[in-house]
Figure 1 (tube, rainbow over the protein chains, first blue to last red):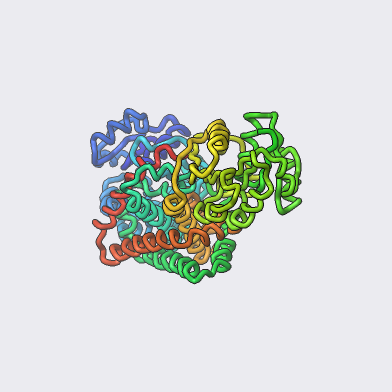
Figure 2 (figure 1 turned 60 degrees about the vertical axis):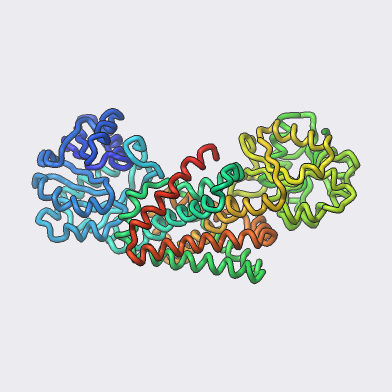
Amino acid sequence: MKNIYAIGVGLIGGSLAIDIKKNDPSVVIHGVSRKESTLDEALRLKLIDKKAALDDIEHADLVIISIPVDATVKLLPTVLDKIPDTALVVDAGSTKVDICRAVENHPKRRNFLAMHPIAGTEHSGPSAAMEGLFVGKTNIVCEVEKTTFKLQEKALKLFTDIGMRIRYMNPEAHDKHIAYVSHLSHISSFMLGKTVIEKEKNERDIFDMAGSGFASTVRLAKSSPEMWTPIFRQNKMNVIETLDEYISNLSHFKEMMEEDDFEGVFNEMKNTNHIKDILNGIH
Amino acid sequence: MKNIYAIGVGLIGGSLAIDIKKNDPSVVIHGVSRKESTLDEALRLKLIDKKAALDDIEHADLVIISIPVDATVKLLPTVLDKIPDTALVVDAGSTKVDICRAVENHPKRRNFLAMHPIAGTEHSGPSAAMEGLFVGKTNIVCEVEKTTFKLQEKALKLFTDIGMRIRYMNPEAHDKHIAYVSHLSHISSFMLGKTVIEKEKNERDIFDMAGSGFASTVRLAKSSPEMWTPIFRQNKMNVIETLDEYISNLSHFKEMMEEDDFEGVFNEMKNTNHIKDILNGIH
């Protein structure tokens, strides 16, 4: 594992590069990006050792793809075309069905491991990369049986060494559940932000009234639309299902209020309070 | 300002007691609560110096009421009945219209200052109290003109001394805007928690997939139903308005997804991204 190519050097790609390099200073991290300015920034921030072009991955031992999921679907077959037979390719996309499908019949399918490291912040780009982002976090690996055993082992070591625990799941289950525990949160946050901004657009100083609770619930509304639009497109049916249920729960809450059923309102909240126990352990 | 009576010694009452005592160790904090066990806990945690009964407030220089807003509406007239003519009474309730109305014709109305310190966490009870909770936070004061000037001055000094900035607002404006920047966030969070728990109730280990984003958006779902139900009841019309708009925005987002209008989805998020600037400065 000497030559590592990071395709995408933003929050996830950059943070992976930092931690992998820290664990093994002998590796050379080559950055690949559509934008020259992004690579310059990554180099300046010391996320990568060298700038590279896509064709250079013919020298790769490992390729890490951390770009928007629509770009991953398009690029992944080409990446597999170009790598040597011994190289491992991983992706870090927030959807897994379309990505796995894009290479299901590729002759080098066994060189690819589909992953979703559950880590991040609402920030993006090279400047958002940080050391230790993955410590104690979950890395979901899909269709592990389709990857060469030797490359599975390499990946397992690499990602446990940077502090991650590995969970195995099929792509369909991943996309279904992640819609609930991640994608829906982003939409609820964006729409909460929209609702408040629309109402208060002429009264900016109203935000003086906002406390840490508001900040917490709308934090994800800072996220990158460039990254999230393709996620929602690829996971459309699952996300729509979560929205249906969320809207239905909100409407029911509103109806109880309209009917002065505040015992019902109380019980709704009480029954949800045990989220406390569930959240223990999420950082 | 020697004898301070804290009616309610939970997160807000307890935290106020800590900071006020720290600034002036000569004050004596007397705790008043319906529950003896709560007072014992507050004493053990050194939030209060002494346990007291409601009738003891005839010796008060200052009474701080930090209990659920329905209890405040009921108790406030009695508190004003019992205090000496020179005492100041403040409340810390998250609604202001009903509380101000409850004492509008009280002969000691001028001894009362209606407040809403915008500070807190999702935890409650004496053990949730903490030092420095109010530093840099906003304290909204309503109907300041109805309070004796001398007592206004006392209150202003007390709360700026513990680090708060003061904003003046009428109770109607307070209740309308706080519905957007606080009450709606709590409902969005509770219903998000409910939606995910319902779906995943038989698959608890799915929460391994939840990252910090989910934790952030559902944090407020840990809040106390005992405190929040009366808030929603008192601010019913404003809260229903926010829910109508929030549900409408979510439904529109879902419709765009159903119609494959992902340019619209992108624009919705892009237009909400400037919440970044708004949130700067909220802690």
